[in-house]
Length: 83
Image (cartoon, rainbow, N blue to C red; front, side, top):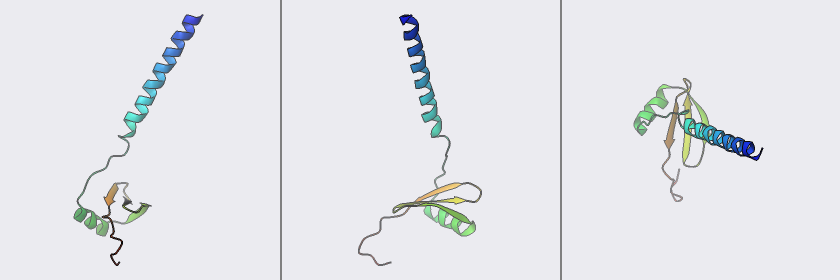
């Protein structure tokens, strides 16, 4: 009886490791992004309507209505500069 429990334990543990591996390895393929230059980004901003998604201090993301994700990084703002 103990032998069957031991085999069942290792089988469940193996299946759990395989499932976790599949979750984490396929998660990176769900969102693919294309790098564009900043000037190309500005051209696309002028051409297409955007929906704001997330605004942080140094990073912002915008989503085009056709579901393309564009990520751009703002340069750090100097505390003594005037806006």
